[in-house]
Length: 278
Picture 1: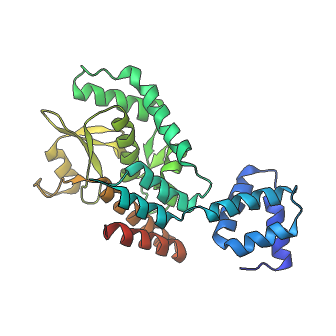
Picture 2 (picture 1 turned 90 degrees about the horizontal axis):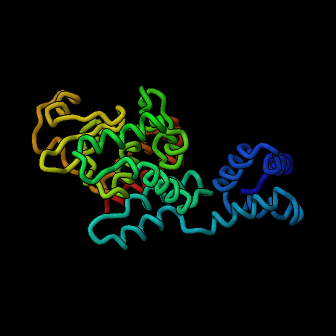
Picture 3 (picture 1 turned 60 degrees about the vertical axis):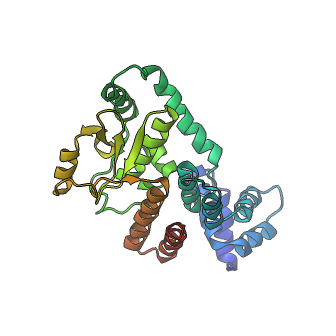
């Protein structure tokens, strides 16, 4: 898409704005506009101009593998299940092309390292979960966004933004909880609950964890009370990493549809189709 001269001047001005947030948003917009627009910016300014530097960075993003290709590669490499962390990164990079996987990994590694001194393998599982809950929800103040269905916000689903803002929806908070727990070798799995998403600690006496509500501990019957249905074998199935990614992209599809952002909704639909076809 070629820009009109006045629009080109505006883009160049925003790319050299002193506010890094404005520059970051303009770079993401430039990424959406595509290669032709980026090359137009590059040809309009000298090589030492700030706008040239930022546009060159966007061009590198455009040359990187697209999210569909990254997800397909993960599916091709999967043995028993897809890599959840890498999959969530690929989805987030579709909206934040400047996101680097090593930054995401280091952030999660840091969370696990910080809580490790408080995790004792000989502790009762409930004590272990309470320690993890205190760290995530008291010390770091991770929270579930109330009424998120009434205020659609895609950043409640993108793992990088949930880590930054420490606010999410059930499945995004559960995903972060899982990725930290797995680094600690805790036997915690996702539970594909209808209308909600929780976790289960697998031990001699399994119990459930609700990260959206500060990690409260639940019995199977209490899980049933949450959705107003009697507990049966089909209501609390274990969610594979693939299923978590499908639900995450499904949430994003509904969010962008509610916001009237058809191009992004269509992108999410293509990711869902790809993942469901695995």
